[in-house]
Length: 125
Image (tube, rainbow, N blue to C red; front, side):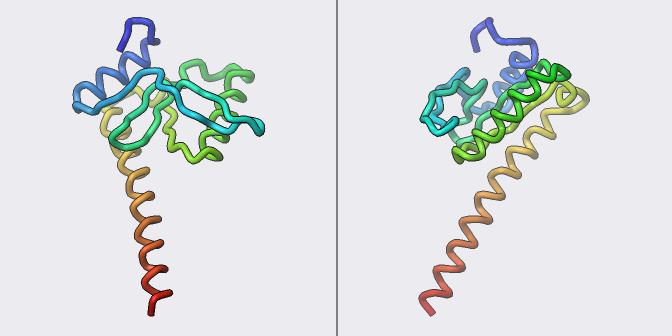
């Protein structure tokens, strides 16, 4: 990761490096925002898992918080799995919790796929 990231982003990059997780910093993603396709640059893209990470480091500012809520809604509507990390999340043994969150995203995807397979089997019967 380049030197220009915030302290929180640098902490996330060190954790991803520690776990040897491939990532791209400020990776472009196509999203549907207010009816138009836009290119947004997520803080981290984990290509092996198709998961984005966004560091929301300036909480407490109503305009910033509204922007984060909008980002969450746009990512969800665009089908992008994105985990938001806040300064308070980077306390204690936070890497374990972040790894659990990534695992949960992947488990939910697998459950949806398993459900699709089960429906397909029922239709064939």
